[in-house]
Every structure is written in C-alpha cells, then in structure tokens.
Amino acid sequence: MAAEKATVGGKYLEYKGKPLVREGDTICYGDMTDKYILVLEIMSYKDTNGVQVPDDIFIQVINPKNSSDIKNQGSKKGLYDAMGIGLVWLERALM
Image (cartoon, rainbow, N blue to C red; front, side, top):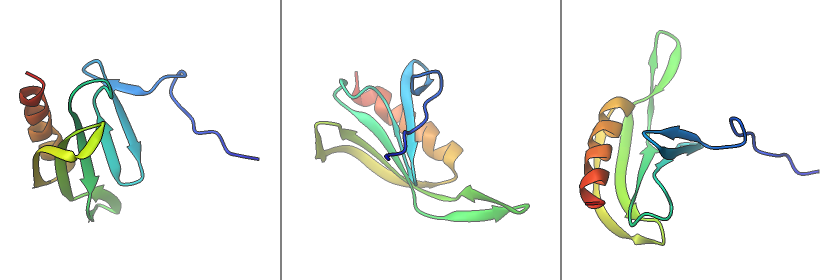
C-alpha cells in the first residue's frame, strides 16, 4: 500500500502567487511552466535553542525543463537571506 503525500487543501502552498514545495532538503519555488524557477538546497543546519534551523543554503535559478541551464547560483547563510536574494534573481530572470 503506497502512502499518499499530503497537500494543504488539495493544492501546493503558495507564496506571492507561485507554488512553494519542499521535499527533504530541497525547496522549489515557481511555476514549472515559467522559463526559470528558484531552487534552494539546504546544505547544513545549526542548533538554535534546541531547534535545528537551516544554515548554509545553496541557491540556483534554473530552467525547469533543462536543469543544466543555470541562470544564477550562489550561497547564503540562513533561509531568510537565501530566499531574499533568490527571489530577486528569479524576478530578473523572468523579465
């Protein structure tokens, strides 16, 4: 018997009108029909008051149809900073 994956209300979570999906240490943001999407890869965690929070994040803006087509890539400390710069890169790539 295969386990079903849960979604919120039958849909993916959305941020600013685009799907936001996390599986394991990979977070994908964007519409797969767009030319580029944002991929955040959590490389390490740190302990903050007994809670594991993402620390080193690898950021890529890639073509969802061809993952070797990388528009931008880099790394940041912390998920907040990584998402911030990644959103700017993605917005510029989609112009």
